[in-house]
Image (cartoon, rainbow, N blue to C red; front, side, top):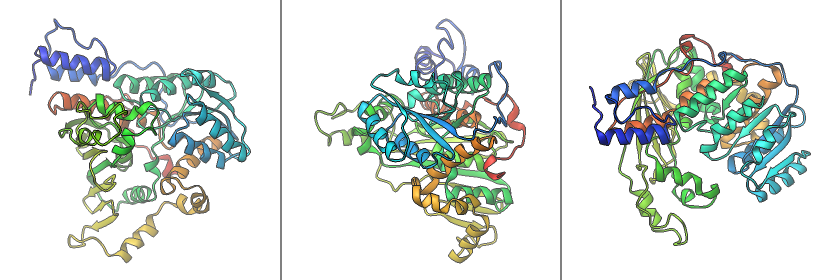
Length: 465
């Protein structure tokens, strides 16, 4: 279907491509174009400025020297997890946060662990001084979303590997900046998607590779998590997270559910996301809840939140598979990432985890049989790190497994479990979903961040060793 660009459509597309997509001057006011042509331009692949980092390895780093930007909830936990791996596998060289109290508190906690890092604090640019140091191997970026890509890009340009919290970027331009910079500098840029390391997720991944599911056809992924009290609170610096709900409508946080599903489906390793369509419900919960907070809260009694209560995306892959992706952080629903996967021989559904096999008469298999599958196909890393997981925990243990794997892979000089192409293709759902919502659920194509190399079948490192 051809959607012609009238004056109203032009203004909407211009606002999206300039302010949110990060691509100014996509069309001019005098240009004759249609929406489909404009969306095609968004998916165009720019010329490479470096060499692919697929399969990137670097010489072993016996003790990984770490710098951490952002000491909020995620940054603080990652810092203490790295500290648990010191000094045998890592060393915390420097920490940074704009909030001086956060830095001071973390410094005191690290001293008890035998770590005495340099500190950078009190200025919005302090992190730049830190990443300019020549005694750092790896930078963790654990700041508000809008800072992830700029900090990761600068860190790579300074010769550092990067581990960046989710989403890795929030505009299409930022996604390309991550890819291009990683290729130019030959540095790792790994998205810190902890859910890819969950016991359940790695179990399913093993079953997929063993052929238990047969041919994979369909999956469901989600981030359903009631955060409204936190959104209006002050745990987030400058209440940054609710500001995204005020300004944008789309899937703001796609990767927790989508990352594992992308791995089940070999995305960027034999298949790729091809296009999505997205819709949002009306916004009601945030406005209603805003009446219950303190009148001195900046977001008290507001009705101008843009983000709908529920956003959904339908994603089609090059091989014809389909993914239904949900985002809801406001309604009173039980937490869920869905983690549903359908194949010709089996179906799994999460929350709670259940398995149905092709000959099980449309019933979930009994608990004893389910546990047999858990034992047979469980990922060995969860047994190997059992005592360390119990000691360090983090979202049931997945956080520790994630950080351990990152540091250990650098120690051994093997490729990381996830690369910059994963970071870009999972994160770009946010800007693509917004433009689809704004233009009435039109299909929006995914860029090919691998520049054609997604067709190469390759195994995930987490399944190799």
